[in-house]
Amino acid sequence: MHRIGIRVRVPAIVGAVTLALIWSLASNHQVIAITGPQAPDRTLSVMTYNIHHGEGADGLLDLQRVADIIRGAGADVVALQEVDRHWSGRSACMDQAEWLAKELDMHYVYAANLDRDPGECSPSRSQYGTAILSRYPILESRNTLLPRPEGGEQRGLLEVLINVRGVHVRIYNTHLQHDSQVERTAQVEAIVEHMGDIDSPTILMGDLNASPDDPELTPLYAVLRDGWVESGDGPGYTYSSDDPYTRIDYIFISQDIQVRDINVIMNDQTAAASDHLPVLANLLLPGTAVGGGR
Image (cartoon, rainbow, N blue to C red; front, side, top):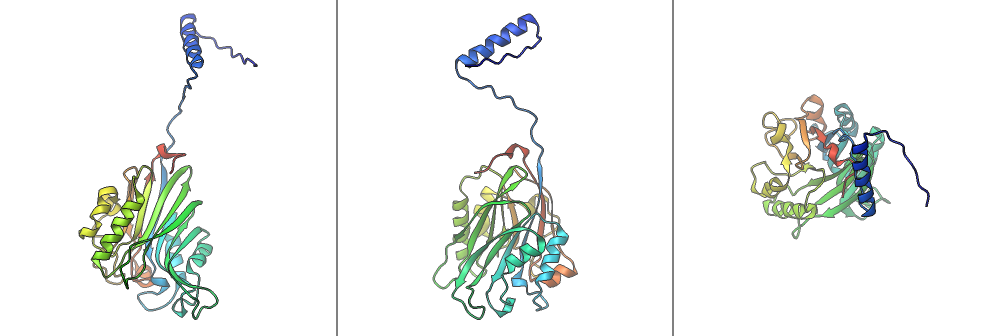
């Protein structure tokens, strides 16, 4: 065994006590953790946007408008709903998530909640669902199908883990049933159960097709915070884009995330590009979570 000697000039009494303590700890195989200053909080800009497969309130198919809105907002992570992949001629048989990711130079994952045999976009399968775009690396992803009664449209919960400069953030994206409170209730309960104990930075975004006071959202408010309630100004209406009258698009956050500001992006461009308005939030992630994640 090689011994490494370090010469340190300390007062005799302090030195003796210190050496005795180190020797005692070493003899008992204990490790002394010396911590430095806490890492600074990380900023993260997130957006939720139901893009209506690129068809605007004016009836025009124009995915470039959607890309321009996202680029102009400067969002780091975008949760998209109503995204087509080779679905039909309504979206020109495009893989919309892939096209947006390339156009914006972002990572992406796509989740097909509807997956059908090839149709007019043959040989590709016809798919419809949600997507997440991210400027930060996506470490893992999965899609969980949510409860669906006989005849209802299949919905899902897309989940990713991203690395934001050392902070691992779990992000969920969902689109709940539009015409059944019973279905939404079952879907929210399934989401809360799936998330389990939330012990690291977590964000849930999406089109929930429910107003803030609707009872089916109560389980979400028990485990997450509504970003608009935290820092929003006004009613925050997101639908419909050309004459908004209700708030059904949300950004929920865990207790360890701060909301710096949150806004519904409302202008001539967003009024035309989809039937929903996008919601953008600037967040602070805790520096204490650097190196964390589950």
